[in-house]
Length: 580
Image (cartoon, helix red, strand yellow):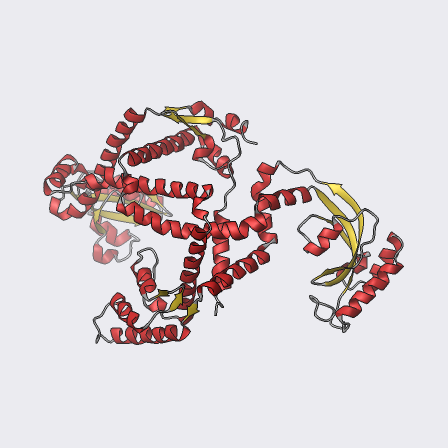
């Protein structure tokens, strides 16, 4: 029933793991600003992992980053003062975010904390402080992972054989001899030598024995997915690590890698148990019929015989029953309607004509709902990390709403304001200066100089162009090029922009050729009529007004909150002295 759960769960785990960032060190870095009675620290404005990039940017870049953060913070403070966090738009956004955030928090609490929580990270940290150099003998059996093709023995026989071998080993030399002659692992050619290995390179059952075994001691039979092993430890060496705080992110990522399969299995088991409790039913037959109806709708729509919209079509499909049920609730085609209406989703009805895709969407929606319910039932919404994340997101929404309020909502694009802006910025709407020229293009400089001299003495430029110029279709154009602006033809355009009518340029090197030309007419810049450029003026006006209102409000915030900046603490050496 839940054949898609592994895909869904793996995607969730990947998204949560990607979102798990390194915790701030206990020292938040130096104080870099102050708003009222509250201090802002370096690691408020950047995360520790971004510090290298931050300090490469130079002092002015760091100042700009800090002032932007402080201004955003003041916007948010003012937004809360005005009660923006209580408006319907933000409440609706936070409701949607709470549900999606709850899914991540439940997976983090139920799965990630179990396999990669602080206890697991500290255990891994201690285990990584040493490496073991050892040897092993491997005896495989039918059903073990990748046994040699000639192996036919059973698991029981393999255990008997490895036990017999162990009974004969008295010292390191015996172990090497038996490894050479009997081990069924490629390391047998080196007496079973594995070299030094760290915690995490071997299967759990193998490494737990190897790391606890005294030097020059033989283990009893150890089972792994490859078969049965005997292990002999030759030596152990200590490894110097950075502090736990500095390595915490690496430790977490290493655990995610080591425990990936276990985490996916645990997540699947959790979802299965929740679906069992919820009596979830995915109506596969109903989904199959829906997809057929989508195909029919698309074909009918393309023939022009149907005027219904995709949303209207999906609304009609609701009458034929739910796509899934769980805990006395239903998943209907409304979830597909929501996807079509989402401007950032990029979904069309054509892309939804896929049975497996719709099942994946439905299963994901059910899983999100039942996991969210578990989160609220288990009190996850009361946890500090949830409240902190909730507050962080709410602040982001308040910031967005405040910008709309301060900037966008104050824009008045009336005809009078547009006319006034146009009159004050008319020079921005001038046409380009355009020149008609007669040009001669040749490959030899001597020829260009000679022809230039003839032109200076009154020779007809068009006749010279037809006879000597290398330009294509010169017989037809007579060498005349019309309406050349400063930004056309490279050096030629730049030179023309400063020339007058009847003026002849000296020969210019253009690529592998030489060019000279005469200006025969000039169309000077003219103001473009307002109506011809109204759409551009409207865009320019709105951007101008946004900047103007933002500047006014920024001044108000600065006067109100009086932020203090400690730019001297943005120095790299100061910051490095506070980071562990």
